[in-house]
Length: 602
Image 1 (cartoon, helix red, strand yellow):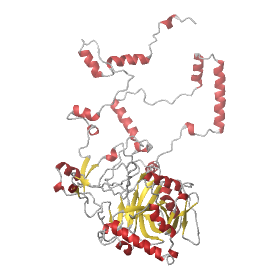
Image 2: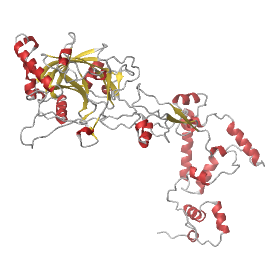
Image 3: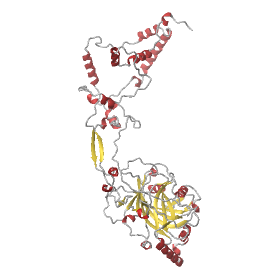
Image 4: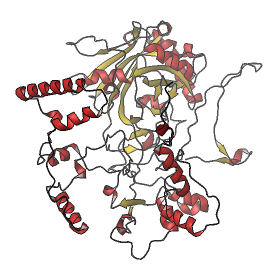
């Protein structure tokens, strides 16, 4: 190792960073602290702030509260004060969709319940910020404005952007080659190299009035004039706008809260016909999500029986209210997907025997053989009449089928006509269910089982379709649960032999499916309240069906809703000795154990 010279050993090895750290540790960079240290000389130590640790920013609001402003803070006082007229509170009346409010009257409530109820009736308090556009969360620099501002600006050309000229470029290369040769001839790192560069360099232009005595005020005025000359009036607005995905802060103005609705679907039930007509049949609709394994809507019950069939139940059924005569329903789907099915279930009056035995006549008798089997049909009608007289209040499961909504939407959306007729046959299954259109020109057309893309799940823009369901599945007595239904629905979307083993019941159900209008007439809420634009209360209504979302919906609850849905799933008497049949389940509210303590539910 080479021996160091004598003068080099005396040079201090303290780097500049250590010197700055030492000084900042003593005085913390604050003249006020230095003054305090000079006054209080008997303090032997003080607290230092480590320079390697992050320091929390100053809380501006807290600082302004603890340090009141002086009377005169100078011309920049407005920059540190909050404008007194920034916030304005405006009360907006709350809109009610229904003709009558769903909120009960306050006279019969406890005080704390009354306060909760008022949150559904009071006007909205809207906070308006006048200077919101001056904050960092608002960006007025749109792309069009940026182009408009840049029209009058001179184009900036730098040396690196200029294309080299042929002759000048060759002269510069020769000069560099000559200079590099001269530099190589000199000792590397010597003073001769620098002197040679100085002699070959061109002198800079002289600065005029460099050594003249000029007052500081005059220099500031000249600098101010030079900054203002040819200055763009919106200099900072020329900076490109920040990325929308990474804003500094996001202060979006929220909309006034309103009742949440998903994509709305209008279903109209037109007719239901079997090969034989011997007793009343009752139907219901509901939406199911196979992937989530959830029922995503309440049941919609509708009655398509003839007046003759309805007459069989007159002793047990009170006069029907207009709200129970709906044959069209509006379903709401917040999360539409390829796994949503419209399930149709049929029920009949409870009668003696197994479900299979009760459904047997509908599978063996045909309408064409009505004359030949007249005596048998009369006997069946007589038995059905007896069951309706005795057990007309009770129901039993009969048959079911399902419609894959997205297949219907994708089929109807691809057609050029205003409406579509689709026939759905559950009896013919080639590994999956088939759907056919009633058209002699197009003929039978097999639809795709799945469709990719978000457009396939759009329920707001497809053309109305008329569906004809030609067959139903007979309900199996040991497969009545929703878990069994989910398995059957999953088999409908893939080749499976499970559905082939189910015996079909020939029937014909016609329904219309279309996007729901924005403001439908004669509409009832799930609470059976009339929605506005209800001119005649005697017209058959349309029911809004309450949605049970498959996933959480993060919206405020702005509508008063006092509904409780109870769906008994199963009743197991396997461990009970003896026979257990004709079991009925009654659900009611009680405020005591005595039967007379039953509470009326409206």
